[in-house]
Image: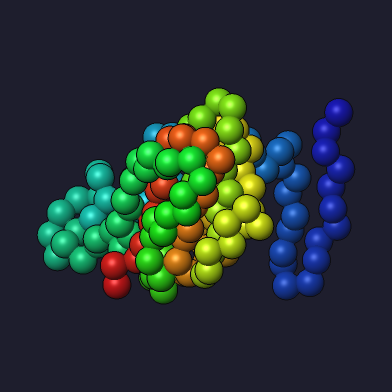
Length: 149
């Protein structure tokens, strides 16, 4: 069944129905994937070379920190960082939960992360100090992303 035609709008604008935005050929055509050279400036793989390519650099740096926690000992893991733009906390233990808090050492009153769970802070990442506490000896992975600018 053909898509219904929408009448012409003022200014010559014409709506054309697409089957699904996720399958829009302007996005999914991988012969020119998003034309990234023009979108991001330059310097991306396949966008050429020259002065424009040298202008691009990644403004984020990530640090992965594995932490072995001792039972009932609170530990300050990350200092205050106002350039923090992302944070991932992963509880690698299959049985014991993890307590964490920002800004002050809340201990067992902090946020709790279930066994094997993950907390992701991306758009609203707190810059405060990060504290961890567990009731058992567990392994935790902390991934911090910070801006370099």
